[in-house]
Length: 106
Image (cartoon, rainbow, N blue to C red; front, top):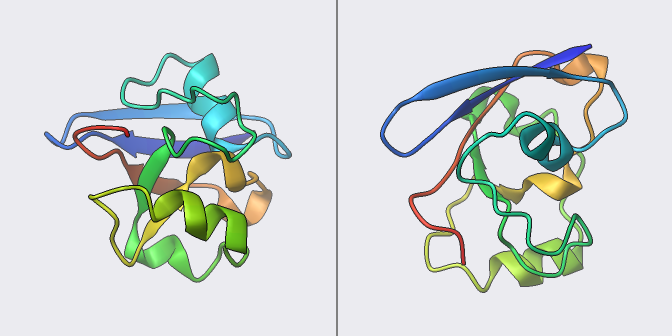
């Protein structure tokens, strides 16, 4: 199991565990994490699973593809460490990953 720490924009935290191979979005939805809408169900077509990846973890993620970049372009809250959590697949290397949800999903 891989642990993921979700923080919201107010600083509230929720730690969840999920199997390697599932997306961070799936881990959030399965565990009732607030702030992850996941309207498209993980097909990278809505940007409602936008998160800010903790700086310590950014370099451990797979590179963002053009589709994810385009979807994030729809967000007015995009930052350097923004990612769509449907595009982050959990692995042992990501055990302890920390992400923060923005105040609003678009």
